[in-house]
Amino acid sequence: MRAVIQRVRRAAVTVIEEAAREPATGVIYIPDARPRAIAAGVVVLLGVAKEDTPAAVAYLAEKTAQLRIFPDAQGKMNVSLLESGHAALVVSQFTLYGDVRRGRRPGFDRAAPPSDAEPLYEEYVRGLRALGVPVETGVFRAHMEVELVNDGPVTILIDSEKTF
Image 1 (cartoon, helix red, strand yellow):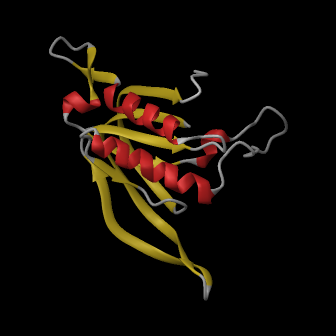
Image 2 (tube, rainbow, N blue to C red):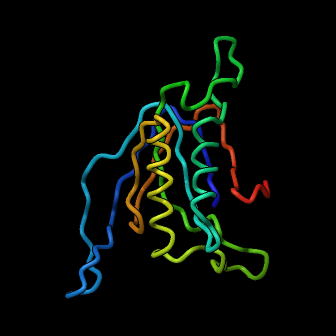
């Protein structure tokens, strides 16, 4: 599981098209106008790999909540998301597993299929909430526009396999 975590002053996601799962008619597209926004906090772009497990989800949720990337009274990055009381905006991002080592078109062989990725994505969101982090989300498998004001800028990469 991979996450790109950006400290933000504010962020919002707008769902442009959402894949509705209706067996009788196949996939149709419906707009979702519900506002999905946070004030200060983090935007988490979350990618799920084929081999990810609930243990990877728990690790990443805990790491996200405890990551000390907010300034303390002296201006040093010493306050966690949880301690700050700020929120997280979590957006699914399978392209984090895009492999561009060969050719010019990314390959997504390591990305989990949606049927496997969505439950782990939802579990990550539940994990953050259980730790006390207020969470807004995008819509899994939807086409979205993400707007944010990066604060710092501060951007952190986390991988449950601890490769970076």
